[in-house]
Length: 496
Image (cartoon, rainbow, N blue to C red; front, side):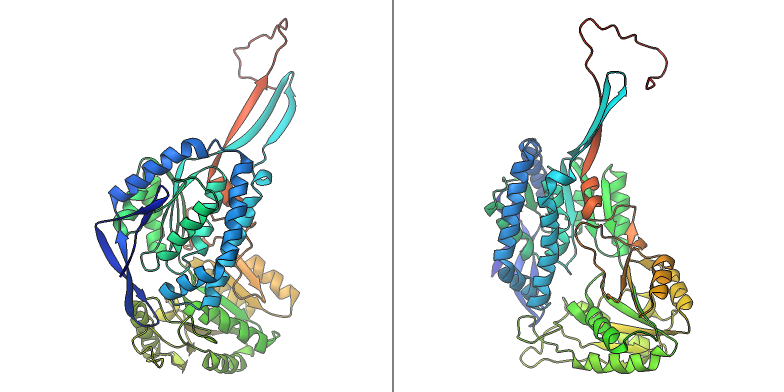
């Protein structure tokens, strides 16, 4: 059986312990992944610190050449990487290719390094004195990433970190670890020096070693809110910069003036795509006023039309969940919602796929008459469950969203510009879509939510990524003529 090893200093590195990697469509173990801890992290940090000495002094041209080559390799190997992701995560190959594309956009942003790293210059701020500034890399930085986007989320981190002159250690999810090693190999083929990008596999031991290591300067994390809080607290206590993105409960509000067929079609895709295992998944449809009954009818029809099957099968729209435990958790949540008074309009529990009876499948579930005190509303289910909450007005919908502890993404379906403007100014959410169900920003904007969806104040990628992985220097310069007498003052200097 294949053993997935660490990638340290440009080559695979073994480890003493391993854990199983499953194929979610069959339920069978397909590989083993090594589990590292403090020793593996320390080895990776030593390699990264050594590589930083030269990589941080490399030219902007060298770094951008590597990024351009890496970007092209991602294009050429998109299908292969997509199938690797599908086999370990369960999502469809097309969905996996989509996440690679969205990750590649950040590489393209990093290719514009020469522009985004430009400093500024102020001439003659005082007599014979000029001021300029520039940014420098931090050193060794790390990313701790979730299972649901094994390519995209790391690609939101390491291209910017590496392009700005840092060296990087990635700790991917042990559930679907192969994408990280595949990307490491592509970096090497692109000409990235050994030690600049490293992969350490493992669980909590590896995470804790990263959070406390004295030579790691910054940590980027995406995952659940409780773990985001833990990462933020531990890393900041140990003097590190932290990006900590947490969980979500994303609402899609539908007004009576919306095209309900269009809205339901897009909400269905946003709710059940990737089996709902997205931090930007639509998990709550807020039906306003007269839209409710018709919207639920259309959502029911759309949910029943979703084609569920193995991620690599032609025509599949939704694959299995990532683990058996995830399947059981989601199906228990549907049963709990019914017990608490929700109407189960479409019940996805107990789905069996011919030839894949042991796979971790559950079908789309649609719940109506869900209220905010129900567990299915309060919890981040991370599965193919769409809850419909009914309200009378747009203002009630805004209040509902603002009362929720999460503030990652939200959407509004309407034909009214006035309603859209009121909505986008009124909701306390970081990313908003108007007639767009999954409002993930482009790479040149920053990704991050509000409230419990972002711990601390550092979003990810875009300009925020550049600022996060670099620190500024401001230089004040005077070049006096040899015979020039400049009086030194004991008072605080001023510009005269």
